[in-house]
Each structure stands twice: as C-alpha cells, then as structure tokens.
Amino acid sequence: MGLLDDVVSGAASDAVTTPDLLRQVHALAQHLDSTELRSWARAELSGYLPEHRLPMYRGPFSLPVGDLDEVLELELRGPLTEISQIADLAGRRGVDDGAETANVARYRDRVGAGIEPRIALMRLCSESRVVPAPLLRSVDESVRNRILELALDLRAVAQRTADGLTVSAAALAFIMDGALGFGLAGAAVDVAEDDADGTDAAALRDELTAVLADAFRAAEAAHVVLADETSAAKRNSVQRLANAVRAGRIPAAPGIPADDAADRVVDIAAHHLGW
Image 1 (cartoon, rainbow, N blue to C red):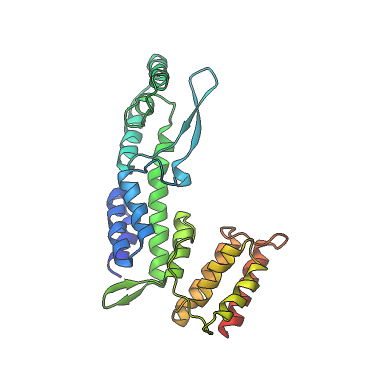
Image 2 (cartoon, rainbow, N blue to C red):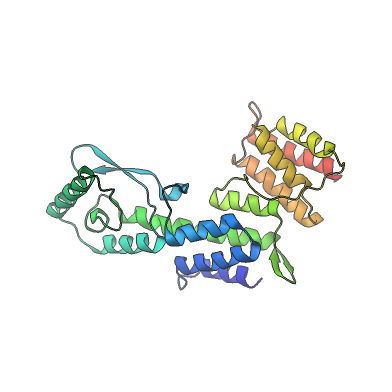
C-alpha cells in the first residue's frame, strides 16, 4: 500500500535510520488524519516537552550515581537522534575512574547551582557509566519496533480509496493503544445507533459495563462495536477490542478473568451485530 509498505520494509532494514522512519510515519499520520500519531512522531524527532506524557521506554529510570548511594532519576526527553548519538559515543569511549568521579562531581555542581542537567549537556552519558549505552540504545530499538508493529497492524485493516488510505477511527485507536500505549480518550468515532434516542448504544454500554472495569472503557468499547465499518473491518475491530481486554490494556471487571472477559466482549458484540 505504498507508504505503509515503505514503512514496513524500512523498519526491517538496517539501511533506513529510525529518524527517517519517523519522518515516514509523520507523512503517514497526515494521510490518516491522525493527530495522535503525528504528535508521537514529532515528539520523537524533536523531543518531549515537560508537559508531554513520556512513553515508558523513555523513563523515568532510577540509576545509581557515584559511591554515596545517590540515585539519578532520569527521563530521556531529548530528540531520538541526540539520544542515539550519545549512545554511540558512550559505547566507543573507554572510561577511567578519575573521569567518572569528575563527571559525577560536575553533575552535582549543576544540580546545586539550580541548573537542570540535560542529557546533551552533561558528559555523564558519554564519558561515564552512570547512564549505560544499552539503555540509551533501547530507546531507538523501542521506537523502531513500535513503528513496525503499527505499520503491520495498519496494513491489515487499511482500505485504499481515491484519496489515499483510510482506517476507521475505532480500529486506529486500538492499533495506537496496542503499539504506542495511547488510550482511547478523544478518539473521534462515528457511532451508528439503531434508534434516534441511542437506546441500542445505551443497552450495549450496560452489558459491557458488567464485563469491563469502568464505565468509560465500556463506552469506548461500545463505540468500537457500533462504529460504521464494513463487515470485515468490523470483525477486525471487535477482535482487536477483545485482544486489548485479553492483554490487560483494557481491564476486566473485578472477579472476571481477562480471557473470560475477552470472550464475553466478543459474544456481546456478536449479539448486537447479528453475527
């Protein structure tokens, strides 16, 4: 599917850098009109602002500093390219104890002076073992793996139209939730209700509320079931909904095992959809 195929092949090739993949994802988000996907790609390329929610693969991490049982609380908010370059530098340089002691002291001086140390400005990353190079490299690998997972899932459900690619809002929300850990809040889902007063949607929410842990998640699940999609896309969306419950991304109601809740979600959807 053009751009999607390019992203899949690029994610599996060492010849394409992760920042270049992110630029492709940014273009893909424009095609899909996905604000969340575009924001994620932009944040990875440009860095996360203090008010941005940080993905788990970027921290916070607790790392020992020096020999005084101090702990460095680290968040990797910088641009991906910067983090990768520091990881390469840290991996190539040897470290002696004197250099490490001096750099730990410089870190303490910065904190004491009220300067918030930034990874790019302090040499703890590049000249000492305080922040291990594998931890920094894991950010690049995590982003790359998520891009591949995202592109493969999108390729399974995307439809080609005269205007390009289209994916239902419900399917896109669950793909984003699975690959990137984004929730469903704010997903723009067109709900097809059987009755003008929404009684079909209300009944479905009531049934799902008995299976899922909270009413908000039940309402979002109802959106997925009732979204206006083709039959094949609908089955994919319902299956992804069940998979999210089974994996614990959508918690089951107390006392109901995740597998049982996932099966019951499928049964409820099938009943309402006439399968």
